[in-house]
Structures are given as structure tokens and as C-alpha cells.
Length: 243
Image (cartoon, rainbow, N blue to C red; front, top):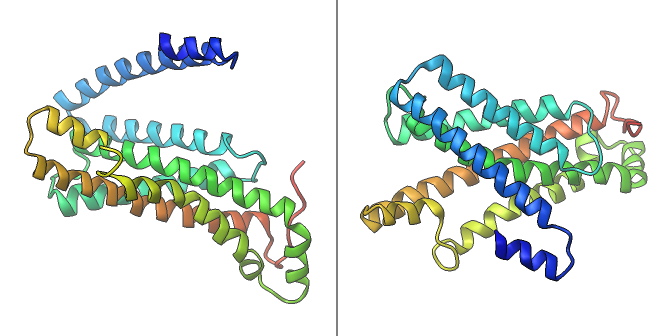
């Protein structure tokens, strides 16, 4: 961190305070999470597990809606529901269907998996949300012309939806493409360093990567559809920009 701050000072980036503050926050947050997870793992309790999941989803929702430049009415509710449905569904499929855990919400497995899903999903959703709201402003004339010619709201917004979804999915597609060739993921590295068989570690890493891509695709597409509904009305008209 001292080296990173030194580079910022040397190049006059004025980012050294933000770097050090981020490092301090990360340290405090991770140690706090470590204590909480130790308690949950040693004494599993379903209400506490679901409360922790809810807090994680709420935090991911906040990060999703603060990144876009322009607001979307109802973005908080839509993002929370999307993250909750896709995150919990994907976690259930992996823990119950793949790992055969009983119960599926065993905190030692469910919470880390959900964290990886949310951490990647919120980035894709934030990019998608930004793309949809930007299109509603910058391509307004084209969208309204299509609507005036008889297109439904989903037909008129199809172009922005496709563009926004592509942008939202690009980071996870790129990271999946270069995994193993350029980047060695943290899960694989951690298992290898702990003495696990590399072949088995690779299987778990593939499971995680495919899980993240599937959940991100669901989150991005779900939020894009929700954005269309919120940006237009039932009479297939584009709503006025929020003040």
C-alpha cells in the first residue's frame, strides 16, 4: 500500500488518501467478517444465516444503484429482488444439486458462494443499469419514433437492452476466457497453496466460474427487462426523465 500511495504521490494522482482509506476499510471489514463467519460456522443457526445473506444482498444492491450516472425509478427494489432471486437460486442449485448438502444453506458453503455470486453480479448489473438509463436519455428521439410507429416498448427498447446486456456480461466473459491462461483465480490458488490436488481444485474452480457466469447472465437480463418496464408505461410510452 505504501508503494501504491507513493506512485499516486509521485504522479500527482491525488488518490493516496482513497487508497489508504480503502485499505483500512478492507482490513476492518474482512476481520469483522472473519469473526462473524467463525461464529456462524461453529454454531450454525438458520435465522442468523439468512440474516447474513440478506445483509449481503442489501450491500450488493447499494453498490449496484450508486454506480450508474443517471437514476432509474425503483432501481433499489428491482436490484434487490433480482440479486436475491438469482443469487439464492444459483446458490441452492450448487449446494443442493451439485454438492448435495443438507441443508442447502449450510453457512460454511452457502455464504462464500453467495458472496462470489453477488460480487460479480453487481458489476454486470451496474453496467447494464447505466446502459439502459443512458439510452433512455441519449436515444430518446429514436425510441419515441419507434413507439409512435406502433412498436411495443420491448421492441423499441430492444437495441438498448441488447447493448446494455452485452456490456454487463463482457467482464465475466473476458475473465472466464483468460482463466488459467493469464489469470489464476483466487479459489484455485488458495486450494493449491493449502495442499489440495490441482485436478480437484480445477474442478471446483470451473464450478465457481460457470456458477458466476450463469447467475450474472440471469441478473443482467432480469434487470434489463425491469428497466424497460420502469422506463416506459403500460401504454407503451417513454416516461419523462426523472427530475
